[in-house]
Length: 290
Image (tube, rainbow, N blue to C red; front, side, top):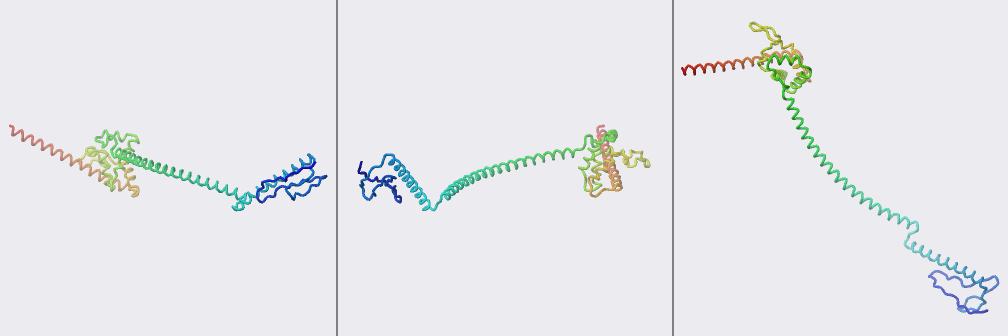
């Protein structure tokens, strides 16, 4: 059987060759397709189907190659290779990531700066309040130290003997108080010591050795008392760099005790004179009344 078949036409993209429309068989020879209409003998259905599969596969391969070449040409025109494209995408993502990181770092830095400022402000307030509290405590401590121990200055022999028999804590309390009083010189410090320790009246009950002199009755020896040893320890702590000598200490303390007793006598004489004057005035007024 013969038939007239037109050569099939396909819309082929530029640069590609259409698949061949010549079919060959091992038993049949086909005339060339030089014209649009060709007369030839149709092959058997099996041979035709097999040839059609081959032709379709060839066309698909050709079309795939075309699009692949086109993509390569586009990337080549843009000077981008597949590897470069991947690197470009990575670079862009990396750049975006770095930008976000920098923004996050800036936010964190601002927050930390504000937090540091608040902490510094809080620390300053704490320091100020601590300094005020420390000053108050120091003032309270100084006021307590400047106050003499309870019962001082001693005013009578009974109180003095009780102190001599007291424990070490009581003696240390007096020594600490005397060290705070101090003085610019040994003699000034010893003056402060004896005035803080006993009254003028009590001082008159003592002499340095306790021995009687002339018409004076025997007195209590001051040199053998524990109070003298307390005076010496306080003086050494107040003048550590000078390292007071015991001989100089005794010399100055004897003079201080004598002067303090003399002050007591002067006060007593003045007091007696005032009393006598009052008595005389009362006698005068009494005579006038009579």
